Image (cartoon, rainbow, N blue to C red; front, top):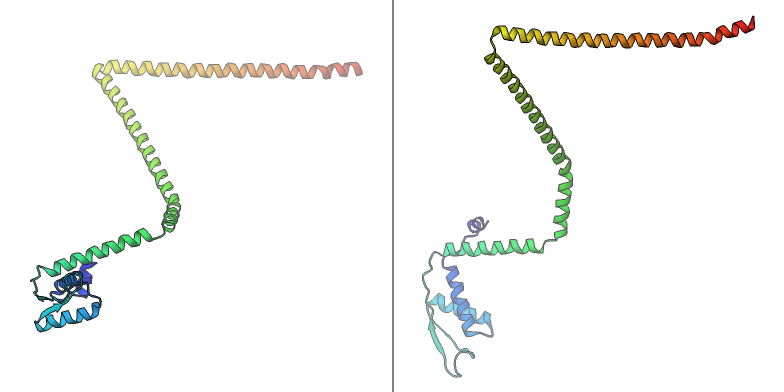
Length: 215
């Protein structure tokens, strides 16, 4: 910002040094009429004359001081001016921030947080779901790896005939388990039919007794 300001409003050559020297003379002489003092000072500087000023603060009555204005050669005035402008701009920014109402900024922050809360909640939910799916995939891969490892172990420990026997034993065990389950289901069905028949006979007996009494 300071560099743009200096480009738009370039500082004249020796301007900083002129103001510096004039300020020093004013503080030293303490003139009552600073406008008249400045006019005489700059006229003498323009004409190259000796600037004479009688100050009631730093000389005795009736005495005068003669000082010839000497211009010191400025050292990189543009760089110094740029630094001065930058410091001034920074100070203004700090003053504006410190003097700005804090309530408004807090309200804006709160409103922004409320506005972004649904999006943040959705993003968090999606992240959890993706993480959960990844964990499930890892578990499936781990289980499949274990199964392959077990198969490889059996294949390495037993030859073809032994594996065939093991498969037959497993098939026989599964067949026995299925037959036992079917047998149990048949028994349960038979028990259910017997109970139904008993209930039916029990319900028919009162009707027969009633018909005999009627006859």
